[in-house]
Amino acid sequence: MLALITALTLAAGWLAGADPSVTVLGRGFANVWPLAMLFGGLALAVAGVVRRSAAVTAISAGTLVAMYVLDLVGKLADPIEPVRAISAFKYYGSAVRDGIDPLAFAGMALAGAALAALGAWLFERRDIA
Image 1: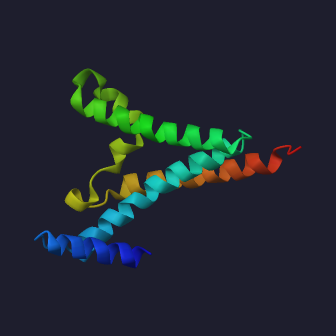
Image 2: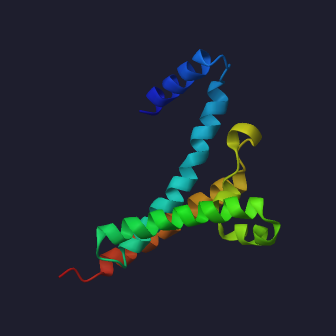
Image 3: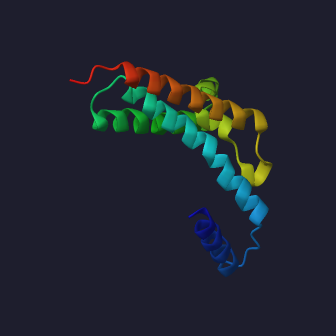
């Protein structure tokens, strides 16, 4: 599937007159992985506590959107800028333009793995009636 997405992205770039690089596209695709791990881990942790799948989805998606909005508003309004520190998107960066930040990449991936482990532990101990 990733190969298909890469091929379609390259084709679209060439049709648009750009000269996309497979390396740059690879960095962009790879940079999404720790962000997905983080929010996937959050969903698993919430699932360990909450019994309804709709609530798990709403809490996880709501947290993702809230973090994005905090990051965006923090970029636009100087008084809010310190609040960006709690947003995962502050650390996400732009791998296509600046390359992958190894510390942010590892930090988000490890936080996602820790949340997933916590979620598995909570879910295992949950009383399913």
